[in-house]
Image (tube, rainbow, N blue to C red; front, side):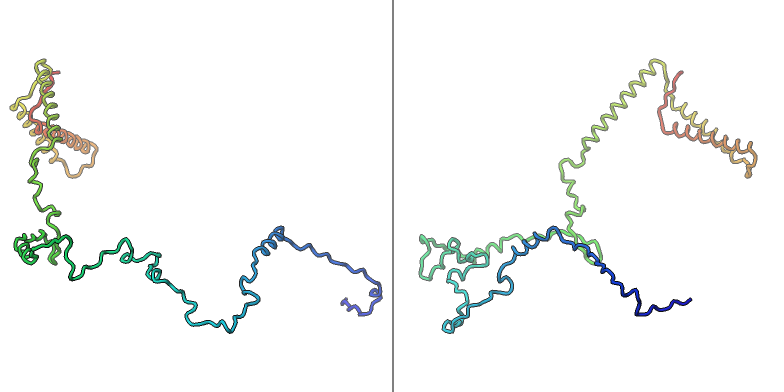
Length: 266
């Protein structure tokens, strides 16, 4: 069913209804309200921005004349600079004596017969000409540099200690010499005791030739290996030859580098 509109006149409208009053929430007030008011009233000054309420009108008899408001400076204050002090040339303690007049005589009668023209001519004739500073040019455009600071001038050969061995090298050579002497003494003592013997030159050459001959034989066998090594036996044989040849090369190098060789008897 469709809702039917309620007519304007209704019996229920005759009953008086109580008016419902809506209570509004209390308005927020700051706790600093009173102190702000006092501070605002305290800082107010009369005629601060708008000027005085009443201004005294000048009298027509006292009209403004020309140049009356300009500052009148005295003669002394007009010569002061920005710092409030007189210029250096006008200061009382910095003043120079006045220029003497034409008729004044020199003080205490001091006179000179010196001819400044002749003196200048003599100094110019006797003066030694100034030597040009040595330079060197290192580019095709003509860039110039001082020769003294370039390191090309052999100025260190003129020192008294030029060519002498430095002290630290002399000390080091002395320590090496002492160590060699101690080692030689130890070797001689061991030889006397029969603990070791020195290998003679002929024996050393024979040992060296025998090592080289052994190396040649191993090298000949190494060159005779097959190109394709596909079995474990061939690989092991090749590795054994390489190890023996490497050891022989070390022994040959040791014997060739050391001319004196000692052999222990034990």
